[in-house]
Image (cartoon, rainbow, N blue to C red; front, side):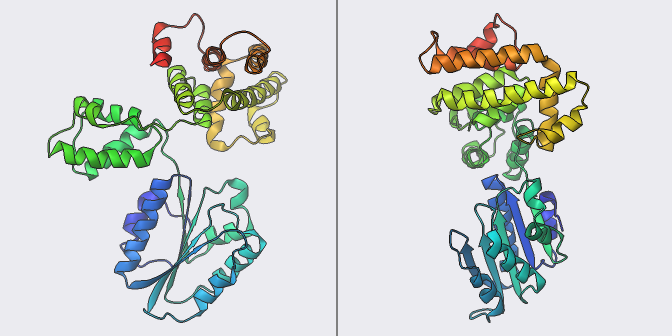
Length: 352
């Protein structure tokens, strides 16, 4: 059974399930969900704890033996099964299905996994975990850039802090995408505020620039048409030492897919069908972003941008003149829908 993360706290006030599965790629939120389950289990008498980390050549019989053996120190126990790659393999799938067929008595099994995509959730073992009547499957979704200010405000409130909207937005900019950094900064601000409301000046003085930038975040900002935000991510990637070929690979990959989709649209193929047949797959959550990009660009324009990408590749290889990062900036802005000449605000954003 699926359990919404927002409902977890209330759920844990009652009788616990025999099995909990936490799946997601946001470390802080996954860790906090697991901590909440552990704390509730501890309060309800699950005093013994065993932890298994599934690595190469993991002995899956340990799971069965742990469930079948008698507890040495307590009447109830917690077994944690951590599967970092989300792929238990044939032996692991068999072991999980065997355990699910007869969950151990007086035992709580906590399984942690990375995010399972649509195909992974259709595997026999994953479906069994999701649909098992004695299991609770908790899917943790990341906080996107638009949700981050509200998430920060909620965390501040939980810490007993009031903050101006400007202060909240400044924290969001400084820790963008890095929830662990946000939580740490909020704890630091709680000590500094000393019961007083937070303003932008206090945040400016205390919060470091912990923004986490990645290539896929750049692509999402470009698809959304957020030109200034995309430039800031590009500058972050440059500052973190990400090489231009890596960024170009992501841009060219997205351009080729957009050009292919735009071509199918011109041929009268419905976009939903084109999405379903796309390779690599376009996940449901990203389709609105891709649709927005297709509204901005025709097939002709996308093919021109592909030529620009080829020119950038030649620059990277030393076969063409020009500054690589300047061309990357221009390609980023054009794909985001920005026309040249660039406004000074966009240039200032990149230069900062």
